[in-house]
Length: 448
Image 1 (tube, rainbow, N blue to C red):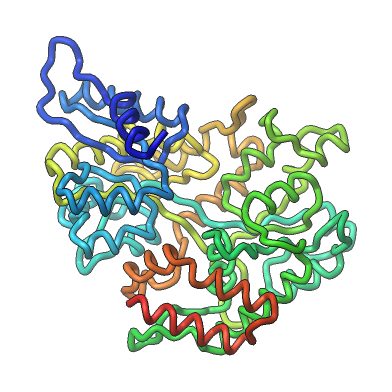
Image 2 (spheres, rainbow, N blue to C red):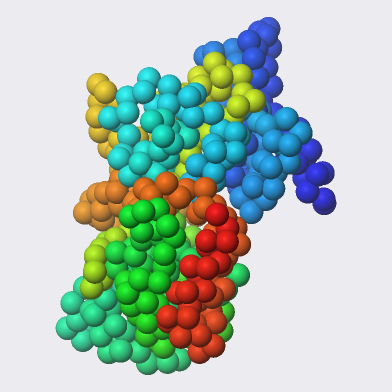
């Protein structure tokens, strides 16, 4: 089926009907990258409740994330943007600068809900002058997963520093039975950028200098490149991305990987379609989950940091502002826990609560269940300490460039995959660390 036919079918399938006997005051068109059937059903239910309460209809339109930028650009050119777009942070500031998103509407919603009720990190990343480009919806902080049981056998400390990561990888490396560390190496995958950026943040690497000029030729960047090459020595050959690292960790063939909290679902063994080999081998369901440690913030020689992802509700310039704002406020209040519950392990609350109940959504998230075939609460399965750490990571997440006013540039960097491409050439020995840093800097500057 062509993209156009898919979109047309989606518009018909997921349009929220006006209730019998009532006429909707307006209709909100909502584009969402949550395209899975069960998540579409949840969004449909939230929309129906909103319609019952307000009389405003909602059309929930699924758009694949890898097609989102193309669809939005085409809609903008045709002056047919939807009212609200759920989207990842890479696009937020860039779309605002391009005139796609309305920062005034987003800021009014945030201030009506209470700016103090939102996590500081996601708000900072959406800052657009004195306003906010979009409303933070949910987020996650990337994690380093490691085998606590194997670390204990070798009496290795938790790998929260560069030197400890390298020494543990060397001590545990026993290919092909066990790889010491699985780094992302596929030049065509955003996942490679995510893993590398996490480590760069941990060493204090900045996208731009104090004067705003892009400069990735710094000693911190060169050290990060060299560190990444050392990690790659403990990684299987070929172009690895998220599918490989997840598969190897769940099969017991990787001592450490870097992944988002979305892996908690598969790791738990609650999914029949995703076998967990260590659980099967030991005859103990949940063995791998109990034997996994989580590191959120990694410390390098020159800093510390954690890569994170935030998603936003963006109100467009073409929107019916009143109706669109009402829909976003509903999603962030009465519909919020159901929104997070679509994938609780990876949709962490970036709005902690309300002015009256400051921890309402954090505490509510703790009670949400994850899993498909079998379900369990996150805090009861992994422990409250892990659950609290996940929340803390979502509140303080960081990314290159956003605090330096380079949010629009980040969209281009991710779209072109410059860094994964140069990184691959470096790992294969075509370029030195200094040459790679210079090439990355030149190519990023060319995008400005």
